Length: 202
Image: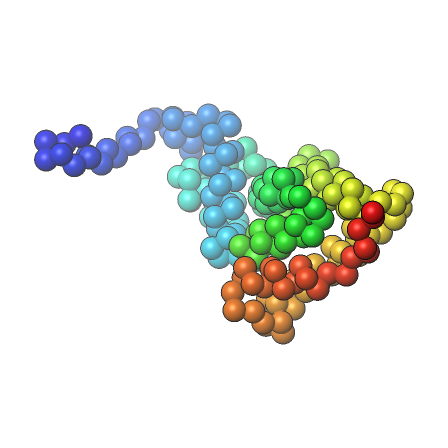
């Protein structure tokens, strides 16, 4: 704390660089910083703004150095997608019933259209992590659906796909301004109310 009673701003001093990476970084921290920067770029500027070079500039390393940690733009997209899907799963997990799952999912989607769209740019690469994150979300949603409506595995699968298709289609109409609401929260509630679901099992 400074003598005036205010907090001093201390500017970090960069350590020596090795192959374009500041000395204070190690592999895990470069990757984490890059994913955070990539997520922020997509959120603020959309998918088209995301490049390895732009992320490297954001975190202060050379793009050649970043390529050694995250080997391509596709890997960055995969990690951003996985992050969005993981939070989606965390948000729906505590839901009391399937309609609340739908509303919580909608609320998260509406917080960032760009990240939502990125989440479904799934890679077929063997090292991709987003498909695993999507599977976790799918399993949580399916368990909630089965708890509320019953049915065998096929009926659960078909019911979840039907609901998911309605959600994504209505979101697209909202973002294209063909469906209007006063704000995103009201849009989430309205869209959730439009989803056609079977009667809950007694």
